[in-house]
Length: 502
Image (cartoon, rainbow, N blue to C red):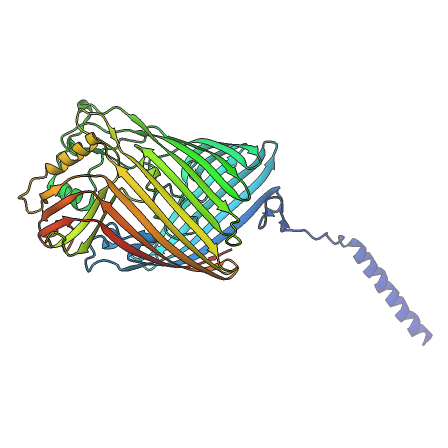
């Protein structure tokens, strides 16, 4: 027994010795690594990219829209998108859109201050897209460093709230539009106490340039039909020659934000010619001219009417720079029809043409002028219910020389051809007004989940008079031959929206 006991104890001791030796050979346990570390310096939602000193924030929203009597983005039925302008049976009385937006914001502290990069894109599937197709857009993409902003960012002309002080539509006129950024190089000074100033150059080619018309063109029958029924004349814009210069001075306080903005814009035409096809270099061209715009904006916050209530007001004047009044995402022409001719004709219609300027062969550019205002009041009834009322007014004016040139080109349309409009007892005046009123109701039952409904009424107040005699399809598809009267047009647009943000 003693021998067996001795052997067992010896074996146990040997095993203990071996186990201890193996344990001594194992590496020590590594300390836990914090792979996601909160970065509170730049606000909620930022965290450090592992292994770097760069903070990143990811964001997104998913949105579903149903639009009534209008296109996507809350666009009123003032043109032939979705065949809405003529109100024929091919019109889409409602449209839908599903959208996902993604954004990335990074910040890195350096000896020159914070380096920031920002990118946001949207993926859209709208009425008319194929089952698995859609569009991808880059809305903002910029770098900020040492006071500079380089890339696609909000225009320096824009007020901080822009066209979205509490509404859904992206077609609220009477000022600039923040539906997307504009490519720029800008510098911002921060003076402290909420006071800042910015100056920059911006690419005006896509968003801030309306059409430039050569009233010396002899219109073809097809061009005449388009011009008279839709307001879209052949444009005589030259290439992208000089960027716009835009800037602002801003005061941002807890109770209000005020901003004064200005922009300079060049009008750069192509060559003279009897038609757009015969405009060639030897004919010469009009000299470039400068236009511009000024804007003042005020937003009152923390109003006594309720927590979070805001009142926003802005006014803008432009000379030769009309897209600073009728926002960048809006087209250059408007038209709409209604039933029952006021002068005994088949139907009446409004047609409006927006141009930065007009010239004739051998002449100089005559700049268009205009002004616009818009106001917006947001009221919070409770932490979950919010309502907004808003309105705009826009006036566009062509001077006497521009009006005479415009009307002479339109009057040169000759009747008789099967595809030609004829002006019958018509008076010509390209000046116009557009006014809008609307309201939005929003319910937020859970954080970052909002259901909203909006209604918008738009009036196209045009100055042409009399009537047009048109052949079959001369005023648009499915329109019969007959007399069509110039007349102001009003239209309602509706929008239902669901948005979830994270």
